[in-house]
Image 1: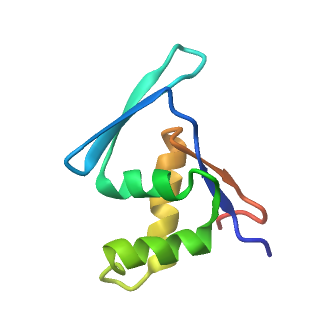
Image 2 (image 1 turned 90 degrees about the vertical axis):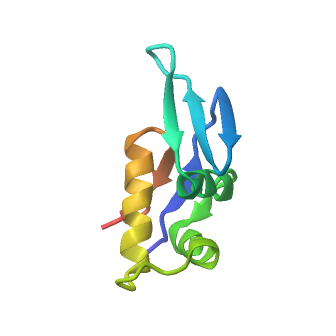
Length: 98
């Protein structure tokens, strides 16, 4: 089973202030703005060149810590799924996230 690869979608513009930011994404409707937390910004930064999901989890845990319930994989999948639904990242699922 291949580890899915997460890749940040190219933004038209990005603004980061005090650890939070907004990303302007271009699409068929002309564009939209997505607000991101420090965690979302970290995912975008780490996946600019593409990063396997497992490696992303390790890097996020080093920066933000492990979730209280200890389910790092589940937490990372939830964040990536949310960012993908917003069009901020893309996932090459390989065998899938499930």
